[in-house]
Each structure stands twice: as structure tokens, then as C-alpha cells.
Length: 82
Length: 420
Image (cartoon, rainbow over all chains, first blue to last red; front, side, top):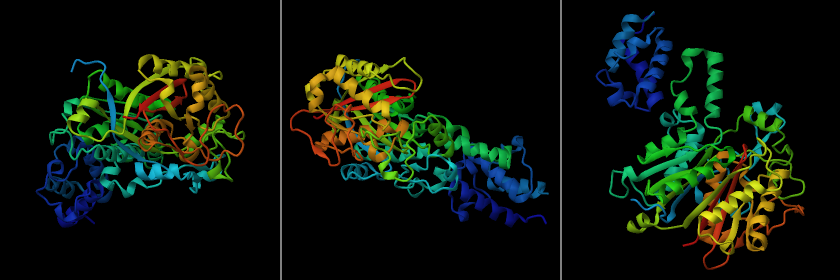
């Protein structure tokens, strides 16, 4: 069953917390991975791989650069999840 | 900054070792004659011929938060812990450039390891095979590269004068400190954070060193296994950890009123050109390094009161070093209190020169030579004044200490420090 927007946000928050140590409540739709959440380009790859596994979605490398904010990632996963 | 022969001093020390999580607890452990060696309890150790090692006393996971730690190889974690301590111990309270204490363009970092991020490499290879390509960490390359610890230390303190990693197996830590001394002496930098680190307690390195017959297999007596100068010594015991010092030009240290532990007098370097792993048995290669030290500095053999020996507890190496000391210093060796601290810490490979420089500098500062433990029957060929079982007071007046480090490949590095 496909995850809701709320479930995806919650899942991403847990992933970002695990990888960057940011409190889950600070991982909000308008936050930038790089500027707000201490997720650099290498750590972003880890976020993507964890999200792919959790939400049964493929995020090709070429699409990763478009995921600037948490909201970008949530929308992408909503649209592409299996 | 055109001066090419500036005086260099040590203003900060830091360490994380099998004896303690910082320099002072390590020093107390050395004075107490405590062994940091234990039995390897991990499942993977059960099949190995060598099941002993000197693991770190304080788990780095309790010091470095997980989000940062997961991007750092264990060797870089040790280096960072030791460097932070040394930086604070030198009286710096901020990253370079954030206050006026040091110009980032005049700050360097030189940190070495013998093997680099070997556990990262091997662990990620396991990930590749077991979980597939996509699961290999994107942090793998910066974690396994041998310059990773130096680069992370450089980032931490804001070093822009140059970040370096000389690699010479078990002499790497000492070579790093020697390189740093030169950076300051020749005017390239005013302050350099320098040392060595190693984290190689993993079945592959242990199997490999074991198959070289380089390691002690005294699994039934872990704390007695590292026994430099004892007639029954049968190889080294692998240790892990890091030792880092802050080196500084004497003028820079004086200008900011820093406490000075010792002068870093200089170094002597040579290579054996004899065998890829065996030490040159007559000690000629090491003697050449000692002679180079005397020729390139104002150090006098009469001043040398203490030597932190390389002495890893191998049958050949321990004696070759003493032969070299006799060749160069003759009867002066009689007044040099010789300590083999690897009897307590095990052999930290590229970390050894860092930790043993910290020990040498503290020995001068406290005028106390740490002991060598586990000598039941002194090898008659160990023709020197070995400090056994208990620490020994060093004489008053101006005295110097040497730290010897030698590495596979025939690398010989001798560092000299002197009281101020």
C-alpha cells in the first residue's frame, strides 16, 4: 500500500535523524537538505538509498540533484512509489 | 617569514590509547606499568592464531556523536579525539581565524597512519558482497584514504598552510611529527598539529601480520605478551589509538604566552636499503639516522637522558636498535634511561610515533622515564640501561629525550626533544 504524504515525511525525518543527527521534529517540508539539515552531497546519497528501500521507489542519480528540500523528496516519492 | 632555522617547541599534547582516553590517563597508565593488552573476544578472533591485542581504552563512540562518526574511519576518529585534546591543551579555544590566536594561513596539520582506513575498506567490501553496489557508503573513499585523518584534523582546526600524510609503516607517526617540525623550522607555518593514528584490529591485518611471524602468539598470557628486551620475546602485540602534539615556533608560543612542554630539537632520518621487512641486523641503518640527527641539530649526546625506544618485542629489532645506539653514542648510552612503552600499549603501528612522542615530551616535562614491563630475564644483548618495572626520575638541568620509530620498508626516524 502506498505511503501517505504524512508517512513519507515521518519516514524521511527518521532517515535524516539517523544520518545527520537532526531532531525529527526539525525535518519539515520547507527545509533544505544542504542548508538546514546538514546533509551534504555524500550524505544525500545515503538519504536517497535509505528512502528507496523504505518506500519501494527508485530515485536515479540524475533526479537526486532536483531534490533540494524535504518537500521535493516527499513529492517525488509520492509520485514514484511502487 | 624568511627564517630557515627557527626554534620549534611543543605546546600541546593529546592521545587516546589502550591505556586511557586522553594524554594524562595514558601517562598515568604508563607510570603505573599497566598493560593495555587483552584477549580478543569477538567471534572472528576464534580461528586466528593471534587472539590478543591492545584495544582502545575509551570507545570513540562515547566521544564523537554518531552522525559525525559514521563518516569517519576509526583511525580518523582517534586522530580527531587526540587532536582536539592537543589543540585545547595548547590553549586554543577556537578554530583558526575565529579569534586572533593563530592565522589559518600559518597553521598546518600533519597526521599519518601506517595502513589507513583498512577497516572501512574491508567492511565496505563485505557490504558490497552481501548487500550489493547500491549499499556501499558514499563516504567510503574519504574514510579509507590514508590522508583522511590529516584532512579531518585540518578541517577541525582550520589549517591552510598545508595538510600532509607521510607514510612509512610503523615510522609514519614519527615522520609526520618530523615533517611538522620542518614546516615550522623553515618558515612555512607557525603552528602545526601533528601525530599518528592507527585502527587495524581486524582479522585480515592480524592474519597477515601473524603469517609473517611478526606477532606474539602468547594468547594464554595477554598482559605478558609484549615483552621487549626479555629473552623470551616472540613478536609484537597489535595496538590501536592516536597521539598528537601541537608544535609551534618558539616566537609564536612566546607571543601568546603558551605553556611550553619541551623544545622539538630535530630529527634524523635514514633508510636501511636492506630488506622489505627485516631490520638491518647490525643497526647500521638506524645508526645513520642517529648520526643525521646529531649532524643536523645542536643536540649533544651528553644531554640525552632518556630514550623512548622503538622496541616492539621482536627478537631481532629490539637488539639492532641498541647496537645502533652504541655505535653512535658509545659510553654515553650508559646515562640514557631506555624505556619500551610498547610493553604496555602494544604496537600502534603508524600511531606509535604519535603516542610515543607524547610520552617522550611528558617524560621530559615531568622528568620521569616510564618503565618497561614484562622483563623477567633481560636479554644479555640488550646492552643499555633499561628502565624496568617502575618509573625512574630523570636528572635536573637541561636534558633531552629521543623517540625512535622504524617501519617495514626500512624506514628509520628519530625525533629529539629537550627541556626548556
